[in-house]
Image (cartoon, rainbow, N blue to C red; front, side, top):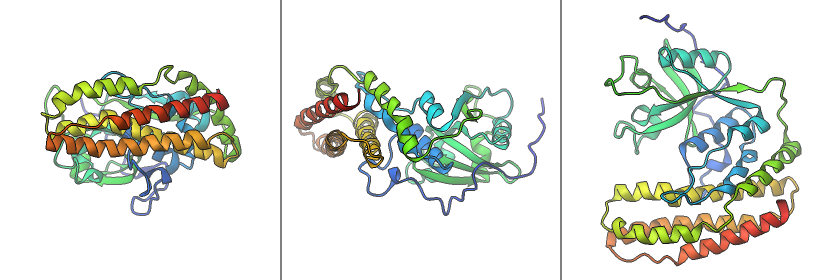
Length: 333
């Protein structure tokens, strides 16, 4: 069956230029963890690019846990985005060519969050672009089907692709083989009649989310469980290659390290809005983020040299987690 071709015109939501776009300070050069995970980084920059303060959404970072084979793959809850910014995330059913769905939603003023192949995303040059087929989520802000151009949020910034990359990400020539499944796609509707709060009002709207996520936080310190699992995993990690190290580190050290750095940023933002009781827990969360980064390097060296890894830093992070949680429960629960 043939579908009607998209109109030959540029469709955009926010007037953004990849060459002049200024990423949020969360993704600044001074960060301990420059990136977190693709979905969270995307929503941070999407909110920022559309004119909202993404720091307000980060209360959820305080509730992550060690899940047994990884730390929580943390993502901003849809309900929080709805309450703070009026984002109404809905799944997009793919029943015709993906490019046509994306163009129609963007024309309606709705950003589209879509899984694409990093092989064809120029912003991943040096990691995946034209070297590795990996799934990642981008946020489409602009599309011109006729000129084969896409403006999208991804990881820590805003970028564009065109030409053959456009044709490939949208599989305009058909899927590579019959087992290729449609991507998971969402679009952002807008909460009807909602006026997003700003400044002090935004901080006040965020405080109930802080209490909600503190109530979800683990009742027991997750770091002793992580230490025990890491100690067992070291038996096979020491026989593994660098690719296995990167995968393990991403699911564990980077997840909780980056997450708790976001938690620190959230608390300090509340402090700037006049909220008391943030200094001690913010300092403790930053210490966890820094220690996790050092431990990542130490693990890489231990694997390369086949030498034991000192697990004392995990005990230190456990102590800092307990301090942070006790302080926050006392002040905000």
